Length: 366
Image 1 (cartoon, rainbow, N blue to C red):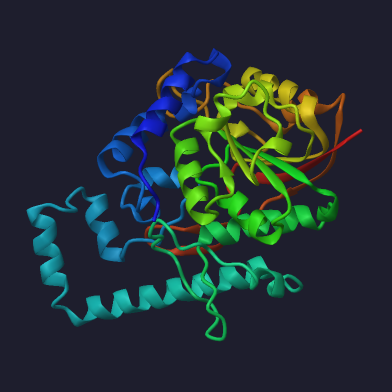
Image 2 (cartoon, rainbow, N blue to C red):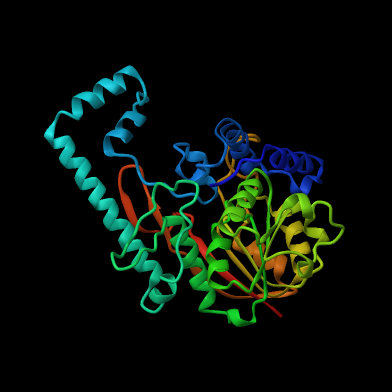
């Protein structure tokens, strides 16, 4: 059960507002934040992974597609209306409708199972079978791929495992004692790695309300192992030697970090910021990251906003920016197009490589 804690959310939001401009939501994310806050205030987060609202998809939650008819009604803006109910009532009496929906569900089930085997790969199946999605917050795409194992997964969990597997092939995790993730979303990547490497200490960093959701989720998945924001906000310095396995901080607290970080990770985060904001973050991150930086970002940057306040970035951050900002201390070892799972409203795709192309990137300290 994911607990709602309005006092914690309010404290985070107030501290965010008081922080420097570098740490405020960028133009891209401000649009999402304005849509997300009312949903959280009205519904809470106890079932956020099963919410009908698509806003949670913006930071890592995956959901199954609606039925073909559900999509039809939505497209024509009649879902939930009297006309919509009449259309559904009529279609449900038609045998063809039942056949189509049945086939759609079978196709989606096959898609999920295929994603499991793709994520596991040829050599990692046994490792993946040692862990399982928590199943907390009512994920609607939770499934059991193998009858012989009770382990359950979601597309999000498999995607995070796939990213971990990419990094694991390139660095020795036995030498990784500390990990910092910026832009943790609901905490899915931390969940995967923590379950595989319980001895690693994690620094979880984001802005609220995502940070709030991540803290509450991770506290439920790993009870007793999380040092929360209310504790770290009172600290002058953030030293992982003095905190629990998972430590929660706001982005504005990064300058307080004095612990060496072996691996810094960030996925689909910097692409939502303008280059000067990213440069400021990297100046801080480089000061405490000792070995590796892993990024999964759009190499050509996010789409441009038509104007301030509209969806998009004001200036895209590209691969060239990452290399420029990190060049003196870190060298780009490898970049490779990322594999992303996607489930659309009408159909499914085995492998989704976005038009703008997300890439895995690994930088090593020089």
